[in-house]
Length: 248
Ligand SMILES: CC(C)(COP(=O)(O)OP(=O)(O)OC[C@H]1O[C@@H](n2cnc3c(N)ncnc32)[C@H](O)[C@@H]1O)[C@@H](O)C(=O)NCCC(=O)NCCS
Ligand SMILES: Nc1ncnc2c1ncn2[C@@H]1O[C@H](COP(=O)(O)OP(=O)(O)OP(=O)(O)O)[C@@H](O)[C@H]1O
Image 1 (cartoon, protein in one colour):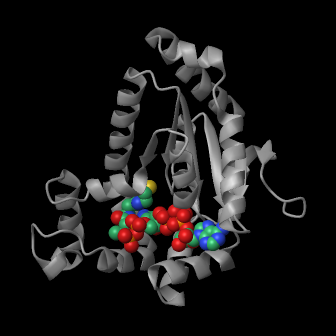
Image 2: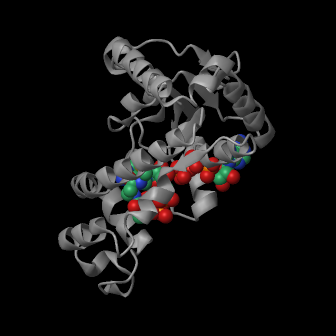
């Protein structure tokens, strides 16, 4: 099974790219959705969050109520130390949910899966994917898109952008970069081009249905990424990109 990690920055266009990928019938694991699942009141992470942050992060400030997402967002996007605590509670729970879903897809003999994970490159998750797609747009476009999509002030929107690694640095990790600087039609075209390049070959597809070979292929893909090393140290040039000639 080829596991592709799709990432970018806040409002860089990941969900829009995902909606095109879905039309191809490729299964998607959406980490923003998993992040919602693991903070539901029945999940152990919920209690850990309330223990640390207090009921102030809950709707009506009442135990058992869902998270007040705006309030919680204001706290964690405004304070790096608090964000670190939140991440240390939520991210392991998300990682476990990803692994469960990958296992189920592997058992079904799936040959290609895309994980939509905003923070793929902030942690170590990039090491378990065989290919990385980065959806890029400049910070000023991110700012404009967050404000018009979420109705946030410039200050709140900037806090969200600054809570992530600069998007341009993420490009170093990419096997494929989708430059989302033009209209939605170009974004769709670039996405389809990249997905075409990522299609596993027919031998892969057949082997993915035979568990021992599928397991070996996963190990091979992961080993290849480990051998390539951390781009923060080696800084390779991305092999493929949908960039217009002037954008590099
Ligand atoms: C803070 C929360 C409640 C804000 O919720 P809200 O509905 O306003 O935003 P949503 O969940 O749709 O996230 C929007 C985007 O914010 C960015 N973002 C979310 N959490 C973080 C974080 N901890 N650090 C940096 N960026 C983040 C991502 O780009 C994400 O796509 C929510 O984002 C959250 O629970 N975050 C912590 C979990 C997490 O790390 N999620 C990212 C998935 S890997
Ligand atoms: N090329 C484009 N032209 C115009 N609007 C766009 C373009 N790409 C994305 N958008 C809009 O920008 C907003 C952000 O895009 P999207 O939600 O896909 O980003 P995202 O990376 O998934 O964001 P987040 O990390 O916050 O979940 C959306 O309202 C989307 O419709």
